[in-house]
Image 1 (cartoon, rainbow, N blue to C red):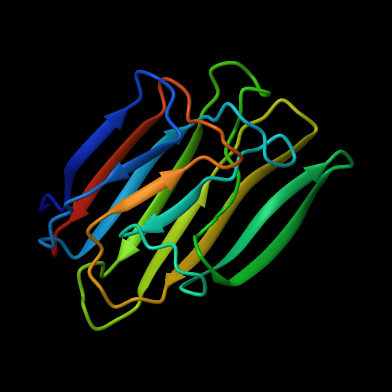
Image 2: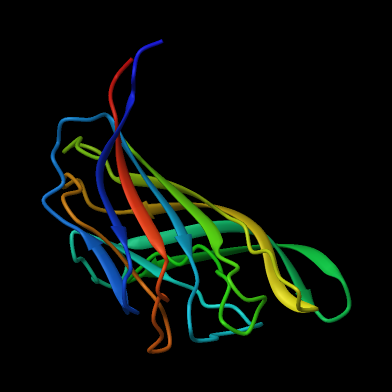
Length: 181
């Protein structure tokens, strides 16, 4: 079997950080995968923190949209939910665990950037998040698709904790390139 995933860079936080950025991403792959294990120190809503994703540093209003499916427990049991946001200045897929939850629990967070270096198409991002929690009010598993309305090749990816929060020590982020098989 051909080796198709190549690690490009890994960042493991030795101190808390508000954001993580991968820059100077080479255009030598067909797709990118950002795989992370995340925990935040700040609650935004429902005991979760909702990190934001930006591409190439672009925060232009109206350039991003996202559609998500997720489970939410607000105290009376899990419910299936969906949401759509358009004309945004960022992509927000869903919540990750915070320090208000079980100690040493991190959320697996995965984003797949399709056809990232093509300069004739808008960029699509697929995302999956799981949030194991010991609380009765929190979000669970989510899946989403985001769109960046820009034809530029993705050369930079940043993920930022919301509400002036930080990603905690031990959060790990690895960017992979996928080669054509």
